[in-house]
Length: 264
Image 1 (tube, helix red, strand yellow):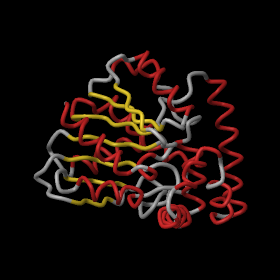
Image 2 (tube, rainbow, N blue to C red):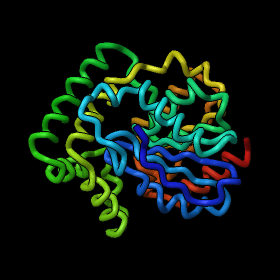
Image 3 (cartoon, rainbow, N blue to C red):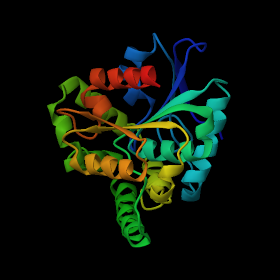
Image 4 (cartoon, rainbow, N blue to C red):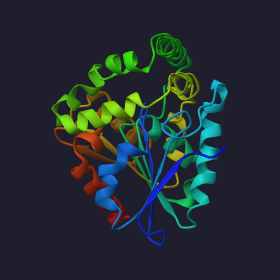
């Protein structure tokens, strides 16, 4: 199965791979890529069940180990150079898993508002049950009703400060998704469905940076806990930003990407 991949820039330049979050697509990165594509070869990928990538009706096909192998095929068919992966939220969890397996091929890992999963099986079980209820809600009520609910959750409160143009683009991106793809993503690659990588953080072989929004207190704390497990992890905090930094503060986000790659 091939994923939908959008490339921007000169393929002879240093590659950066972009992985979106839940309800997202390659479109979420467009304003960031505009700021980077003169310098880098930008490779944005629609994850399984999202955007223009195939929608699988078996939730097992969304599992972490399957997704990272699909991504590896897509990335290595487009570049033979060391590459950076930028992953946001769900895409960051997948990027971390990918780096634990293929980190020696990579130059840098940039995790935006992402976690290594949940530490205990009890936490994972509780999250799986919650995500199953949410998946059934999407299937029962449809994408439009779900998007109305989703854009109102506290995690995205700071996005209300964005311009109407940006908020409408985010809304349209969410509305373009399929109920099956979203529901099965929750079941197959939700935080409760994936393994915990907390105990593996110290084995990372690639330079890693966590990018967090100052106002996203949960993920600020997660980043600090990750650094305790793996002191080489760097943390960049963006003032005035919440969970989706690349949406709320795309200029600052692009600047961080450039500066991290210039350092390493």
